[in-house]
Amino acid sequence: MDILIAGALILMLFIVLGSGLWIGLSLLGVAVIAMEMFTQRPVGDAMLLTIWGTTSSWTLTALPLFLWMGEILFRSKLSEGLFKGLAPWLDRLPGRLLHVNVIGSTIFAAVSGSSAATCATIGKISLPELKKRGYPDDISIGTLAGASTLGLLIPPSIIMIVYGVAANVSIAKLFIAGVIPGLVLAALFSGYIIVWALFNKDKVPPADVSMSFGQKVYASRHLIPVVSLIALVLGSIYSGVATATEAAALGVGGSLILSGLERTLTWATFKSGVMAACRVYCMIGLILAGAAFLTLAMGFIGLPRHLAEFIGALHLSPFMLIVMLVGFFIVLGCFLDGISMVVLTMSILLPTVEKAGFDLIWFGIFIVLVVEMAQITPPVGFNLFVLQGLTKKQLTYLARVALPFFLVMVFMVLLTYFVPDIVLWMPRNMT
Image (cartoon, rainbow, N blue to C red; front, side, top):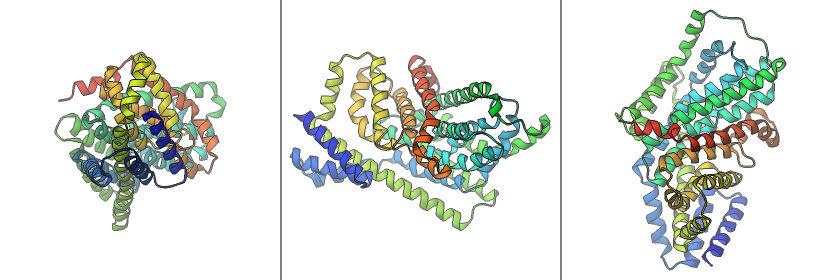
């Protein structure tokens, strides 16, 4: 009976979401109906306590700060410097300037925290340049679609903060755990580009005018500001000098200084950056509040316990459990954004995951990887929406050119399962 009630509520949630109502309000509305109809608990008291407890978390303070840091950098000239600094080094590599999408996204991900911001920023720089130099649209857009998802995996990551709050694990350790998997995934993306280039030599334009080693080093000066900011944020966390929230504040201060030195920090850009970060954080905060209350309602109805019992009764091996969860999150990603997926499912899945013996830090990186896949899965793939705005291409076309990079991410999930030290080595060695 409890499963039928929960199923009806989930169906209602999808109907409300499909109506176009804000995600946070949809979650709150369904939770109120569930509490009123199927429990004896006073709805008002439960809602106030749950929403306050969720949104007043000190850990969550890092989120608006990292969002603001990304907005400041988005409005500066630092992102343009990435192309100027990287391009001279890539002429001899198969695929040449296509690797700018991967390396640029990797670097920008380390100061952004958002895959959508990474996609928009790198896309505005690289796509016009690649098109002008004769690179095919299919591979140019596909590499950007895949590589921009690194904004979620390479710290600081918004989704890691949300998972850390939901699962009550160290956000600093999650951040550090994402470094090696992020670099490995970036290397796999570049590996795919190399293989593609070797089989499609006629589609890769010839190299630009060759530069001497000294000229390449001189061009790399454009990378110094961004690399310095990455070192400040991640170095302070890894060394134990700062918590994730304190590192976020350092990152904001550093990005403001760099933007000032670049002469892009004006009152208009400062104000627009603050407003954009506030809008995004308010959206995320409302989703977190709604999801926390819906989680409470589902808990009173008994869904988490029954679902855990159902999965436990299947007697799945740890590997088959992971395979099932990959499929589950890919399907869920067709309808919900990454943050909603995490906050809606964690309270239900964590008891089962812990019982299966998975480390919660490792599971957090696994979740980020499958949410990355959802970013390029239609119809609700956020990165596909960003790319559609940049390129004016059809969603089906964008999903098709992104498919090879989706499959690379599937391989990465398998790699982290069979070699968990890719994720866990750095957190174990944190000071």
